Image 1 (cartoon, rainbow, N blue to C red):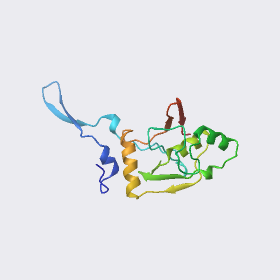
Image 2: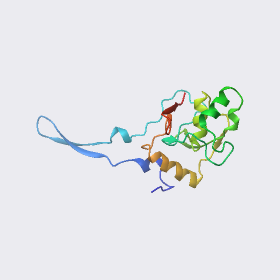
Image 3: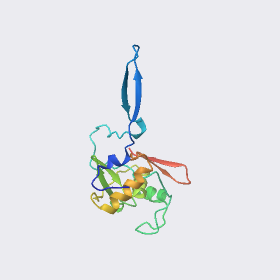
Image 4: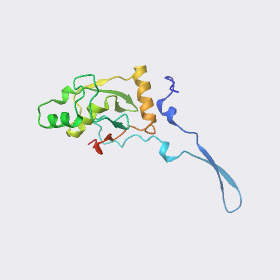
Length: 164
């Protein structure tokens, strides 16, 4: 369960595994190790740009939701309109939560459409601190092992969008 007073990484930590290691003389040392798959690693410093945002869930529908500006429109159609400059990236606001210096999106379909068009977000909205949205993101990240995504699978299409 999410506890707002807890460091978000603590929520995903698994208890270390204790193993005994015996040397040639027969003495043993206890060694604690944490499985690699549960370790959070901050992305390598590559001069993170202000508009670098990671995905915050495993997959998205190929359609925008039934609410908002792009009600029920296919992500690929919006991506094509972005590529041809019929639409501006400003039309797709990206709400995010900042964790450990990493921006993680809350609206993954908009970021996916921008990514398919080869664009980065230009309209960023910081929602860090909103208890409801923080909890929602934590639950979505739990499905991903606690690690924000560099790619997004569009369900039922086989298409994967990769961040640049």
